Amino acid sequence: MMSPSHSEPVTSILAAHRGQPGALLPILHAVQDALGYVPDYAVAQIANTLNLSRAEVHGVVTFYHHFRITPPASHTIQICCAEACQSMGAERLTRHAEKSLAQVSEGECELHPVYCLGLCANSPAMMIDDQLHARVTPEKFDRLIKKMGDGK
Ligand code: FES
Image (cartoon, rainbow, N blue to C red; front, side, top):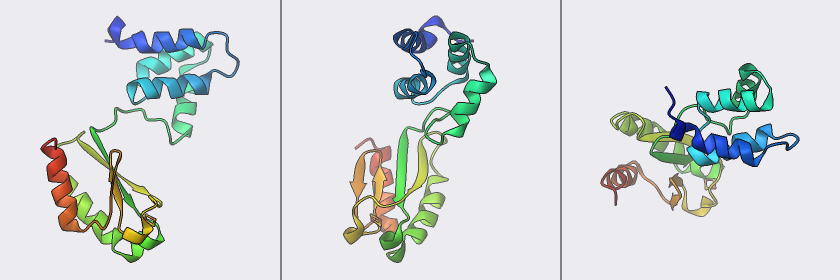
């Protein structure tokens, strides 16, 4: 059951957009910015406030890849899969990353492909949260993940 403090950010966001035409997308962006995702209770609150059905709001949330319906992992890892990085072993690195991350506890890391991080001359490239890393080998990947786990 949702506590009042749980829904408070959503209530404030809805109040800030009261009466605004076409408010659904700005509200969804604001909720995701505040909470990291759009939880079910927010869908219900938004639907109720905008006089829409939950299915309509849920349909918009799931239509756009940007919106999440589950909480984000603690760390986001993006490996570049664009041409320069592919030619320098990004596929091998991705396979290694998938295996390595299978050992990490659930909800700690999520791995996503990305298409060019602007480090093409130093590929393969990846990003851990907002930190760029160049010339990433499987060994370097493991060191970075270990460091991340140690909170360094
Ligand atoms: S192609 Fe990977 S950083 Fe540009």
